[in-house]
Amino acid sequence: MKLSTILVMLFSSIMLSANDSKVNILLFTADDLHSESLGVYGGMPQDLTPNLDKFASQRIQFQKAHVNVAICYPCRTVIGTGLYSHRSGGMGFMPSHPGVPNVIDLMKKGGYMTGILGKQAHSTPKPTSSWDFAFDQKDLGNGRSPKLYKQRSKDFFDKCKKENKPFYFMVNSHDPHRPYCYPEKLLKGAEMPSKVYKPEDVSIPGFLPDLPGVRQEYAAYLNSTRRLDDTFGAVIQGLEESGYAENTLVMFMSDNGIAMPFAKCNTWFYSSRTPLLLRWPKAIKAGQNDDSHFVSTIDFLPTFLEITGVNGPSDLDGKSLTSLLKGHNQEGREFVFTQIDKKAGSAAVPMRAIQNHKFGYIYNAFKEEDRYRNNNEGLTMKAMEEAAKTDKTIADRIQLFRHRIKEEFYDIEKDPNCLNNLIDNPEYKTQIESFKAKLAVNMKATKDPILKAFENMDDRTIVDQVIIDTYGKPVAKKKKNKKKK
Image (cartoon, rainbow, N blue to C red):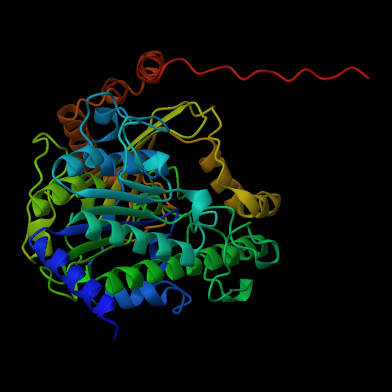
């Protein structure tokens, strides 16, 4: 071995030990991943996510983890601020209010190197914040190149060693976000996944009908998911080669459910449920499985601050996961609250929801006659619309998706796909009222502007005014002038 190589290795060892007491954080997010795609969450086919399944054997796995907003931008704003959307101001594809503290500025002030790969704009709550190290989609093979993710990760770790700083590193895959991976028309810069799937390999989630068109699109989704797993494996390999793995908290999650009807951009069970795996060899006992505590993305920033010792605001909406990571019980984790305010380029579609292990209640504030528009439909919705011509059950599902009713209530334990709305069933009146009361308490505590609409849901005039006061008047779409022949 050359003397120069020995000196480099020795220097790296010294630099690492200098910050050995400072825990590093690597937050890896998938984009639009169905929570049950991972093998360790019962996903099919079983060999879909080998790298994540291997990682899961070294971690703590949460079974009741949710995002608080099932849309990429506001979801990441919750992560970055530790606040519900209506408290931070990030109620859609918009930044948080000026002056709201965020993870980038806090960690930098605490002496940490901050880095990001992919989804940079969506992961920066305040536009004036700047990452120390950043590469976005176009520099990462359209956000779909495992090789480039690994190389950029190694570059970041080298930078941290050189500057002798601990790190907060957010790695955002653009998989399995649409457009899905069709091998015959691969996106420019994207790599092929290590395995390709066919419609016959597919196991359709229960909230979607099993139709040929759905199978075709879901197979392409599986291709994208496999490439996500390839990317995760490449980044973890880079982390292990860097020497940082032992004292790095690695977290894996998805920013929302799959980009298909009845998941992403909504508040149903599979809209917000996320796989959540955490590994920290130096401090967390491997092989833990937490199936009793509800945790969500508002808990991430308090966790980061506690384990790093970085100073931050004391009035965050979430609470640290640290005691759970150590195997302890934690009170106040029987429910999770989720919401939707605005989607990309759309009018306001406010939804508020509360879930526990048994039931889920949803309040939809927007008008039933207004069509809910969603850009996550693709071949799946086309197949459903064709089938709906002769299948009333599918036709009714589309009607619910397009035109929400005011309230929904589901027995999630028996019906996680949210197929049977129990809101008008008198047998559940007591449970419904209890859930509504708990939701109101949370809305009051967090100063949710939609509370007045919730309390006056039968008065459309009041509800409409609340929506205008909260989100502004909807922008009228310009009519296209037809050219005269």
